[in-house]
Length: 405
Image (cartoon, rainbow, N blue to C red):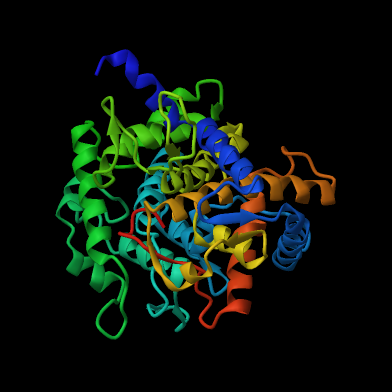
C-alpha cells in the first residue's frame, strides 16, 4: 500500500480521533441505532450528581489530584512511592525521574484486571489488598526488590535485559499468586513485559526511564504538551501489544472494528481507544512536574474506557443493553458490544465532566478531565458496583488477555 495511504491510520493514534469516533458512537446511541446499547441522556445529570457526591466524600476541599498510577501507591495511609523516593536519596531530579518512569511504565502495564479473588498481603500493614491498589503495591515491592533490573548494584530501575527474561513464575511469586490466590492473565502480563524489553532494545533504549530524558529535551521552554507525551508513548511502546490491526504499516494497538462508524471514510469502521497508553501518559505527567516541567493541554487526552468508568454508566441507568441476556454472557474485547460500551464511555465521561464543572462553577483548566476521573468517575464506578453486586465486580464479563482492561 502506498505510503500516502497510511495517514488516515496514523490519525487514529491521536486523542482527537478517539474523541471524534466516541462522539459518533454516542450520537448513534442517542438515535437508537446501535447494535447493543440504548442511551438515556436524561439519566446523566443524576449520574453526575452521584459522581460529585463520591468526589466530595474523598476530597472534601475539592483539591483533587490527577488520575494516575501514583494514587494507587498510597496504601494504609502511607504513600509508598514517597517513602521509597526518600529512602533512595536520588542524586538529582533526572535520576529520580528515570526511576519514576521505570516504575510507572512497568506498573501500568501490569495493571490489568486482577479478578475478584486475588489479594496481595502487604507486609507493612498486614492488610490483604486486591484489584488496582494490590497490583500497584505488588509492582512497587517488586521494583524495590530489583526484580525488573539486571544490575544488582542498582535495584530501583527497569531495564530491557531484565524485562526480556522475566517469566510468569517470577511474576506469580511477586504477586503472591497461586491456586489459592488466583490472578488473571499472568502469562499475558509476563509476555507484555518481555515485549517491552524487546521493543526498548529495538529502539535503542535501555530502560523506560530514557523517555524521561527525551521529554526533558523536548521541553526546552519548560513546557510540554500532553498530546506529545501520548504520541511518544504510542510510538515507543506501540510494538509491545499483541498482534492486532496493522494497516498501511501502522500498528493500531487498542483499535477495534465496528461496522457503523465513519462509513465511507478511508479508515471506516475503526474505533481507537489506546486506554493503557493514555493511562500511562496520565501517569508520566507528574514526574515531569516534579522536575519543574509544565505539562499543558492535559484535557486533550480522553477519559479511560475501562470497566469502572463504563460500569458507572450502566449501573446509573445511562446505558442499557438491548438484550439483557448479554449480562449473563462473557464478551471478547473485540466484540461490537464491548466496542460500543467503551466508545460510549469515552463520550459520556466528557459530558459528565462538563456537568460537574457546571455544578461547581469551575473551568476546564481548574477541573480538567484527569481530576474528574480521579475524584471521580472511577471511584464512583467502583462504589456503585459494590452497591449493586456482591464482590463489586463489573456489570459485564469481559474476556481479556491482560492488555486492554
